Length: 633
Image 1 (cartoon, rainbow, N blue to C red):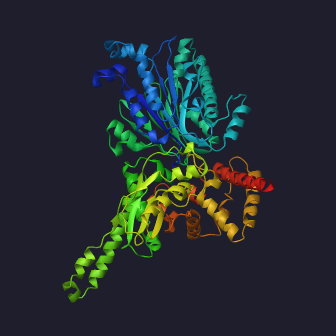
Image 2 (cartoon, helix red, strand yellow; image 1 turned 135 degrees about the vertical axis):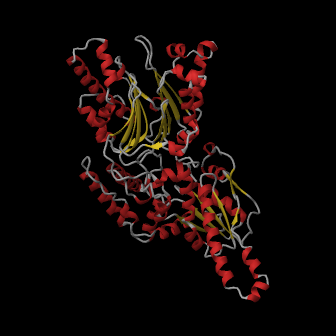
Image 3 (cartoon, rainbow, N blue to C red; image 1 turned 45 degrees about the vertical axis):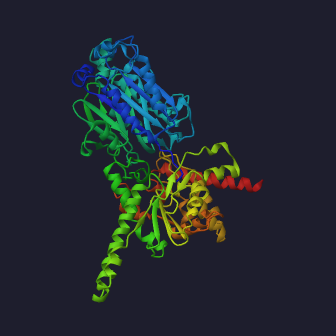
């Protein structure tokens, strides 16, 4: 109900033929550029803070520019970037523009390698300087590096210290910039290694340059850079000499997909984006394996390299629930399955009374889970009908009882409407809350007042603010007897530290509820105990060691149902008359619906890397310190 910002989206296109090949076959040499635009637009949901594109011309001559980059801020960044590029070529005569040889020599973005990035900040650092791709320049083409990614490193301090110890002096403390310098340093070392090889082969001058460019081993560069990385990531890069790569983290946290044929290699963060852009089947698009990199060298040779051995697979389940495009066949099935898993707990929340229940959803991301919930309830109702029919006597059959049973149905309506995007930032206090209450509207007369219960499903309940200040008040206008709020995901208890911009620990409604329960039951000493344990875990930490998530101890005394029941009390706005029930997906239900993506740290606190657990321990220490400071004032 409160929109979360996604980590980022990446897109790459590598043309494997000369530009005039595409001009002759497709009537345009701009196919790579056009595909990049489509790949980015179809991933617009993954990043609306800014965007950037880059291009490499592989056949530029000395004195000619060969790496190009354009960046922009805001939700319209993609259009702004491509409009700027179009403006730069609008005065070129059509016959010259259609000449691939002329274009490659004179038109800036007429190249063979394209990179695109959509950004949401997860580090708190904003502005054009932090928009990808990042570019590291050098007079040697092979040492020029352009980098972008969908990632967040949890141990930036360790990576920073490593490159400082090697003698470098980074100018900016951000994970992208530090990775650029770290990988760039290893790229320099690889170039030096090849330089020495070339000299040993008695090569001179430009022959040495060509040798370096033709033998650059990006797998070696990545293998010497990545062992220290802790986080979820897809790192994409290209060099001035024509190397291209994309690498996925060894836990499989962040997704990456690729397609290749004899004309091109395409990489993106989501499978259906590639399918739709290239008009290919799902089976044609492959997923990069954990710890694997796809590398295309200057000669256009494509290979897959296992850079880091895979760790315990922790594909991100919340990515599937919330962010990924719903037209992916697997994700569509999984989201429906999430809805079906909720039949029993929703039935319990209704006290078994589905005759007087209306089912609906919060638009728009919960719609697919809603279909699954309805399918599950239809199956349940059919079983009830079958049992009732078996019990009928001949007299009841003759008396029309059969028709009465068969007429029973699940009542589904579109009750909630996302009305307009309210600019509530112009108001403060009560005025802001009043404006927020108009973000949604309802379909009036869609249920029987004071008789029907309303079941409303969403994909997640994060902070609970929109639910409390807007949605429940609006739904209450229909005068339901009871409102059952259903989350297709489990209780979100822990922040993500692998690239999704989520609230801080104390902003989660599940965390607030648990702390409230501890106070209500006079168990606040547990807060102090967890604080001590977190401090010890932070003090004892050594790079690479396993780290306990001490915050899990805070939730241990309470069942999921206890937390949900107390949460309903917190969310029950004073002006709401209906009884409120909260139903969450269980973690078991989550894994049943999404069996191939077991990463559940948002819900369970089982972070796949030491860095995640270390960060949440620090978050709890910061929270307690802040509360104590406020109490001392």
